Length: 212
Image (cartoon, rainbow, N blue to C red):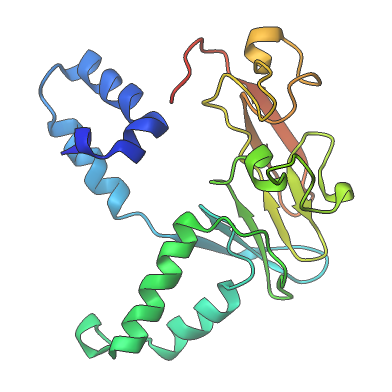
């Protein structure tokens, strides 16, 4: 039951259910249909024709994946043509482990890639780039004026600016509450980024709800 999935309920689940109930009442057919559609979406998308000035191909994932994505593509190539029943225990474990990382990884990249440039969300910027003492864990120059993380050297951009949240890492209200982006740098807006120019477009959250 979705009510038992506390992690999902804390991260927008309550609001999602409220929206469906408002539109469809207790008829959950549309919710189930949409959930099945989401479940069948790919874990990544490679854009072969989108290439930066270093020859790196754009790959979009939910969680930051640049440190292991080349190895993942190599593994998929090696296993091409095999059915799930033909995989060895080790091969199945490797695939499952990387699929989990594509969705849940929270480690700051150290290795990077010369083949791919990775754009991802998942990791809300203030949680991702600061340690428990509020010290930066990344190079200061890689935090852009729009308060996202872009590492051109390693080849990745993390753009989750917590559009659902009313407060940032420091307890400041988001820009929808104050109409000041500069004073509330890390949350309360939706962020898009172009590739390969890496131009940033942001929109403040205009809703008055905290989706948690």
